[in-house]
Every structure is written in structure tokens, then in C-alpha cells.
Image 1 (cartoon, rainbow, N blue to C red):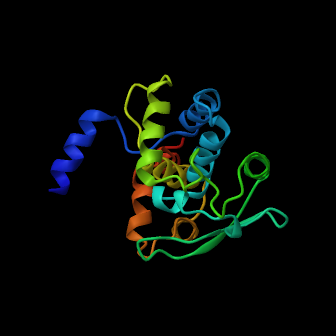
Image 2: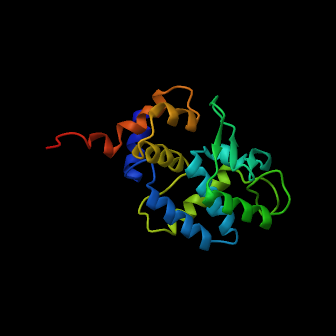
Image 3: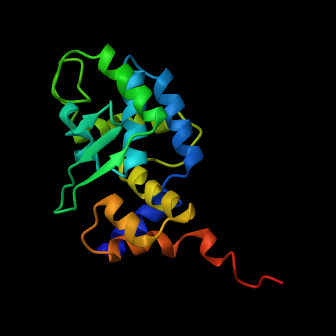
Length: 191
């Protein structure tokens, strides 16, 4: 059944991850699309930079964010390994603005009714943002997580560190990112 699922996906889109440039475009489109552009752009940014699953993203609470120390306490699902990630300038700016502009809620990302954004809601939102971009294939939230893994591999980070960053219990789930890295062949046939 898994092979059938992959065949169908390969007919819909060329790959199951997004490149940094594609993520930047989605963030730019999100900022101008809809009434909650900043919230939506921040969701995409955090999902990508921290390799968050959609349910991990939607369940983020302000008590997991330390803006002073620049840290994000990531609680992983699927029995994943929790970790603490550094927050860098773009994320810190986005989160501070989100905090200033949002109604008081324990959750980072809320709907206009004040309830937490749902996984289904973010999937639909990201799909709409993708359809307003120049991307010629449908996008889904897990492509942000995969994009994070590929970016970290291509930046030269070791597999074990990426495993912990993404919260994988089994390193086999992390190795997939190294298998498709275009940089893995750079040292071949150097004259």
C-alpha cells in the first residue's frame, strides 16, 4: 500500500519537500494573502525552521517559547524526542509581533474565534497559499518538515544531530534526507 501511495504522490508533485526558495515564496504570499497574513507566515516559518509536524505546530503554546533566551521547547508527537531549539532573529521578530497583535491565548496560533488553529485548518490554509504562489504542484504541511531535513543535510550537519533536531527516535527516518541530497556526490570525480 505504501508503494501505491508514493506513486499517486509522485503524479501530483515532483517531490515531497520544499526548497528554501519555495518556502520564502510561500511566506511572502502568506503575508499578503488573507486577514491573518502575519500569523500564517509565522506558522510557515516555524514549521519549516523547526521541522514541526502540523499537529506539533498547531499545539504550540506560549509557555514553550522563551523570547528572552531565544529558545523554543519542542514537544514531539509520535513518541519523538523532545528538544530545545534556538530561535533566530527572523523567528524572534515574527513571534514578538504575533504576541503583540494577538488576543490573549495560551496558544501561539489561533483562529479569529480565539480557538487554536487545527491541523486541518492549517492544511487548507497552506494549500490555498500554495495555489496563490508560482508553485506548479500542490503543497502540504509535511513538505515543510521534509524541507527542513533536506536543508540541514545540504548545509552539512551530521545525521545524528539532525535526528535529534527533528525528534526522530530511529535514525532510519533521518537517513532518508541524506539519500536525496545533491551534495552527497560533490566529492566524486574531482580532478
